[in-house]
Image 1 (cartoon, rainbow, N blue to C red):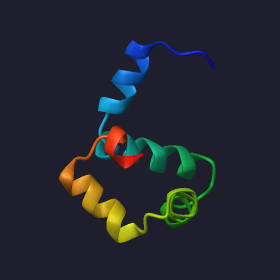
Image 2 (cartoon, rainbow, N blue to C red):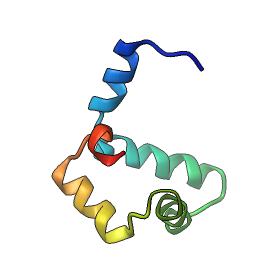
Image 3 (cartoon, helix red, strand yellow):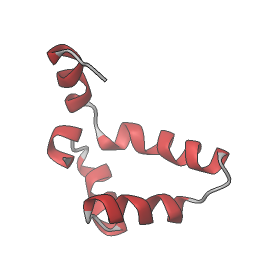
Image 4 (cartoon, rainbow, N blue to C red):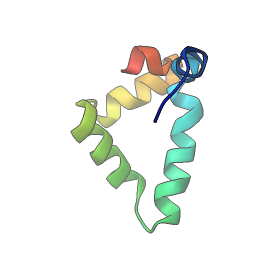
Length: 66
């Protein structure tokens, strides 16, 4: 997928807290659970559920997350 610098900057400014509920909705609509989502996120990033909650509370951006 080809993106523009403006698109990349817009995504980087999104907060994890604003997108995470959409991830939950998506996986639950596919018959999966929030725990399974967290397990996949931990596998991909190394961040556990406690760290994810801290990121949500601190409203970190995807730029910081990744």
